[in-house]
Amino acid sequence: MSALTPLAENLWVANRPLPLPVGDIGTRMTVIRLPDGGLFLHSPVPPDDATKQALDAIGRVRELELDRDGIVRLYEGLAERVA
Image (cartoon, rainbow, N blue to C red; front, side):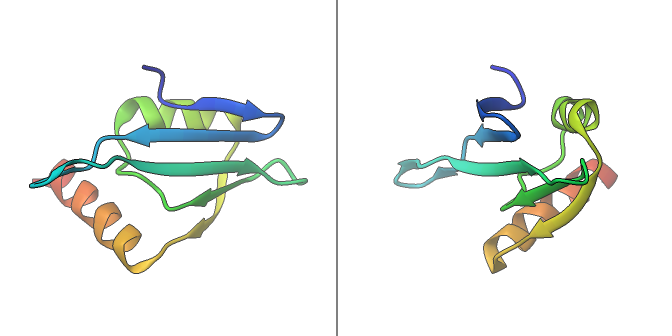
């Protein structure tokens, strides 16, 4: 599985597992390339090395849209990398 899956010009998704006691419901980050070449990330997934490299290859992250759960997932991912 590649880190980012292209859907259309300037539009990608990153699908990741989200295991819960009832089963894996999955999660998805949407990546949009903005007119200035920067990237907009909606509901970011934890930043593993493959995802960071894939993002770096298509542009620089300029904006993030996080819901409450997205913030928790992002910080949990960062905490795991620091620990």
